[in-house]
Length: 178
Image 1: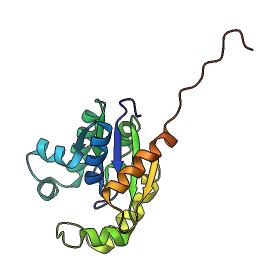
Image 2: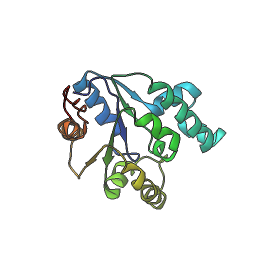
Image 3: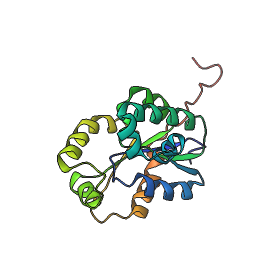
C-alpha cells in the first residue's frame, strides 16, 4: 500500500501515537520506532533528565538529529514526540513519508494524562495544543478520535484513509500527442 514510504505519527502527548503506531507497523509489516525512546538511547538518560540537565533546546536538537537519521530508512512506522512539528527543519524529514495527525480533544488528553505526574498541567497542555494545532494541520492525514475509540479502531481508520491521500503517479502523455 505505501510501497516502503515511512508513516510518521504526530500529535499531542497522550494521543496514542506509540500504541497506534505499533498496531500500524504490524499491519503494514513495517518496523516500529518511537523517537522519544531513540532520544533516550542516544542521550543515555530519560527525557525528563535531558530537560532538567540540558534544557529543551538540547532536547529539540537531539530530536531533529534522531529524525534525520531515521528518515533515511524506509518501511518504518514512527511515533514522534508531540513538539517535533515545531521545528521547520523537521518538516523536511517528515515530508519524505506520510504524516498522520492523531487529533485528540483536550478533555480526552487530560483524562489519559491525569495520573502521569511528569506531564504538564491543564493550562500548559491547552496552550501547547493551541500553538501546535496549525502545525499538526499540515499533516497529510488527520484522524480525529473520540472517547471510547480503541487503538485498534484508530489504526483501522488510518489504514482505510491512506489510499485517499496517496498521490497517484502522473500518467505520462502518450507519444505523438499534442
